[in-house]
Length: 388
Image (cartoon, rainbow, N blue to C red; front, side, top):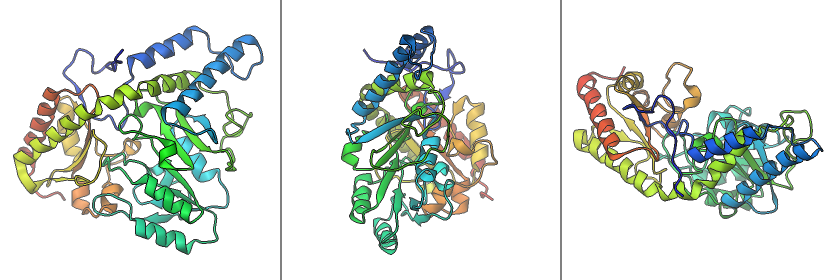
């Protein structure tokens, strides 16, 4: 049976258009049902030895098995539940001692801000990691313990990296490879065995689960120290009683992935339709970042010349449309130029005038028309000036 994504309170029976799926996806009905079902059982401690505790432990193990199956995790790897991809990324970057870190210039802040003085791999104007530069960096680091970390798809531009090739290069130099797949799961196929990486992280609320559930998958032969100490939960890597509610939601959301991937062709057509409309309105006056690269099918990061991001966001919001200026992880701060766009060679002016539109399963053709018309209204009203 096809699963539907439930409307949140502000979408229900309204004309509000949600186009910020990369910040968080809407919770699917099957996830909601699974969570309510486990709550009705009373949540007991899965570490308890009595029968009821062991029933919860089985739910935990079943969820772990779902991770193994859906993203094709081999038996030589461990699956550990976390509070999200941020914590999982922090474990990778802070729990493995004595390593040099090689990361791309466009990584999520949970990677870039987790270690001191990492080696940065540049990206080209389309947002793709420079593989020759990666090889040069690894060649200089020969004899050191090294971890390479490159996200599978960028949360702002949607640009997809050649992770399999990156893992091959890393292993050629005898180093470890990690990918943050938080934005990829549910939008493109994620097969850990095929990617060849040693560690992978993901986050439930990016594909229909609830916030508070994440996963770290890693080779069993890696020595990782916990950054949250306590009991011996989660293979001794994460102290504290497991968040069964979030984990059950994550498991249910993962089981929806095959159906979700079937919707991506339609979503890509809608995304392409949006970009075509905007280009027909103003031609080469706009820039769509990563347009010539492989991208997530739902994502557009678009520069409107002369109009700052915050003005665009307010205008969209006044017209009941939710978009963003980039990573939601910086939403409580003053809007700054996207470091992702700057790394891709965009000017500060372009980076200050760009918004991300990320659509999803609930997006309809009429929504695309409204988004495009609203964008063009902003352009006509404000774009005569210069972005200062």
